[in-house]
Length: 161
Image 1 (cartoon, rainbow, N blue to C red):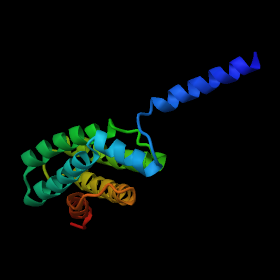
Image 2 (image 1 turned 180 degrees about the vertical axis):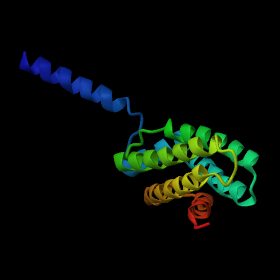
Image 3 (image 1 turned 90 degrees about the vertical axis):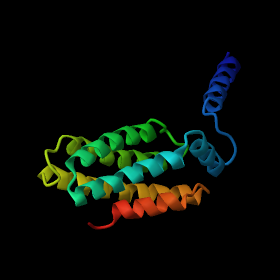
Image 4 (image 1 turned 180 degrees about the horizontal axis):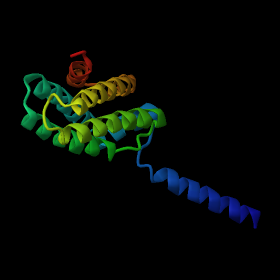
């Protein structure tokens, strides 16, 4: 009876691991996850939205700002929906980043002008999100997933005013 229970548990474990869909080394699994979920293009779009938000505020366009905030929320949601990455620390870093971008989008989407106090708060949240995305980006690069465009966009979004 114990042998049957042990074999059953082993089969369940094997089925659970097979359900992950990624094989090979840990780095290989992260690369497969990134490729399967279009990580780089999704992260680049979120970083571009963050940069566009800062630019819209800088030129004083409330309409553009609110439009970009809607896109930022949607694009951050797309990237967030691809989590759970094979690396749990990476998952946490990306999730924290997207949560900051969500908060920023929520605040600026309803702002009456680019000079509202909520917009300054949103820009600070964008900078926090970009800093966290930069950490995730460096970790992704250590797994062989890298984009010079993402590096550039994250730096633009993260820079001080």
